[in-house]
Image 1 (tube, rainbow, N blue to C red):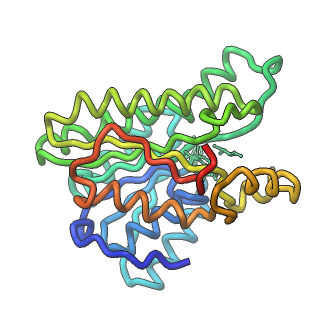
Image 2 (cartoon, rainbow, N blue to C red):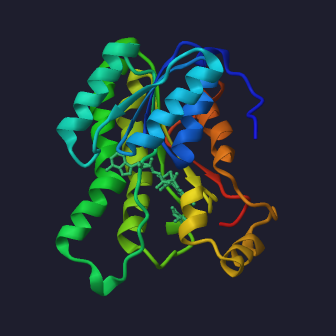
Image 3 (spheres, rainbow, N blue to C red):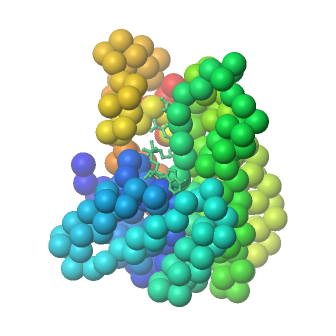
Length: 255
Ligand SMILES: NC(=O)C1=CN([C@@H]2O[C@H](COP(=O)(O)OP(=O)(O)OC[C@H]3O[C@@H](n4cnc5c(N)ncnc54)[C@H](O)[C@@H]3O)[C@@H](O)[C@H]2O)C=CC1
Ligand SMILES: O=C1OC[C@@H](O)[C@H](O)[C@H]1O
């Protein structure tokens, strides 16, 4: 699927994406790269991330910057953000995309599991914002996009720590929008429905589960990771300059 849209203000913009090496994140990396943005992305999936960089360079003649860092390690996250700014200039657009949606039964959850799960699904989003806001404040502008999920809106029962974190992302988004709006920085969220990445297809997509999900959607389509790119570019660009503190639901109409 090609994203046939152009936002001229994104050309040359410094964009930092977490979890940009696979899944939805890889489509976002490619989408911003093809707008002419200077993209850096943080991931732990080394091979896939390098393959993505190589393919983009072959196809466009320009490089995207892969930074290996485990987002549960806040010092590593901050070092990666500093490297992105050193290489590409102060971050104009931050996309907090990385997450881990492993299923867990209530009785299996330990305090350590809970903390780890929050660390990869919520905590790093705040600290990535903390890392890039000095540059955004100095520039008097910036756009931050946090990935939440409709899973908590439809009472998804298979991963309570994940849904708690994703509900938290909406609260975080609104609180940050209030704090950063006076500095010209916008903060919005995207809530995808069920997006059929390779990982989803390998782990959880069965004909019955897919049919049940598509049946509840207004649009009878299978949502692809590329479907997240247009909404994310829109929130990043000046096209949405009067929007902040909002959650854009991209779920083919199921909540
Ligand atoms: N795929 C779906 O159906 C849905 C996804 N979402 C949200 O969309 C976003 C992207 O989702 P997917 O592409 O499906 O996720 P994914 O699990 O396929 O990819 C996440 C990326 O983050 C990276 N990552 C994971 N842990 C990391 C860590 N500790 N440090 C650095 N990088 C790490 C992974 O290597 C991977 O590249 C997430 O925030 C997810 O919660 C929301 C609703 C539905
Ligand atoms: O947020 C989500 O919603 C749908 C789930 O199946 C998926 O694993 C998760 O990322």
